[in-house]
Length: 337
Ligand code: NAD
Ligand code: TYD
Image 1 (cartoon, rainbow, N blue to C red):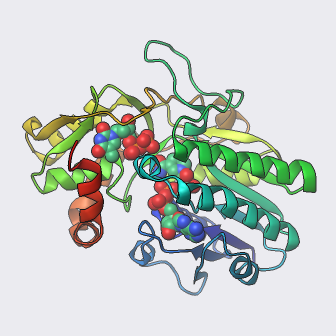
Image 2: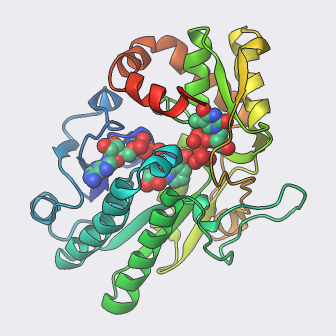
């Protein structure tokens, strides 16, 4: 019975990835290690088969706790635990450096000590910085790392500690770099769920700057399939870009959400821009498509429809978040914008 150690499995992508593994590998067991920060939510794991899934609450920076949770000789560590929101990293970077860098180092050390077969680091296209609006350029695996936000810098640093563990200690590692994910259970601090939840509550939709920044969107389950393909077929030491060839301007995303919910465009409010706001992300996924034989299967239209439907049908999930510390967060981020 293969055993997989997944970190961050109570978050948005992590909880989708836990489901993905259990669905596609009927004999697999998952140990899900997560600190349950503001972004981790046990409700995200509702319905997951308890006979093959063990949840352990713990911090990836806590060496003793990681050592006792990670089984000897497990098949893989998938590191999805992270501080993941750019705006929070601009407000305060400390926790990003701690979790995203130190935490990754601790996991690598313990994976080596426990003889783990492969370490998969889930990274982001943001490590490669920003592309110009007016070019056809896309990020490839050869693009230099040029992070612009504290979040992206911490994820780039994490990639370097992963590289060092392989070069120095021979740990078998693979890195995935994905674009912007969307889908069910994404915390409503990120663009798509924030706009859906504000629109459902007839509240203003805050669009940064001119709304013409471009993101390359992918449905979360397609990302999960990409992580799995990199684990199974990726070359050791390699990074793979995961993207669905789906560039969208922010303002078009926001308008599509309003249209799908039957809400007026007059809810849109242009607000002051994010400092250091990356203009455009665009991924060339050729290596994943050819080497990993991976392809996304959800179109943008179908994925957005499924996502909006999930938020409509799970308003308790959203309201539970919106009624807690989120109110303070919202005031801090948007109050004087
Ligand atoms: P998320 O913020 O929804 O979830 C992060 C999870 O990590 C939470 O469950 C949280 O409790 C846990 N966590 C945070 N700090 C921890 C710590 N010190 N120890 C243990 N657990 C901790 O994030 P997400 O959007 O699901 O992203 C998952 C991963 O994918 C991250 O590594 C992120 O950098 C990467 N990624 C995200 C996107 C995206 O669009 N969301 C795109 C590319 C890559
Ligand atoms: P976000 O979901 O925070 O992801 P990232 O910054 O990691 O790409 O933001 C996606 C885009 O949407 C980004 O260009 C910033 C913009 N944005 C807004 O215009 N308004 C908002 O309230 C948020 C959260 C994001």
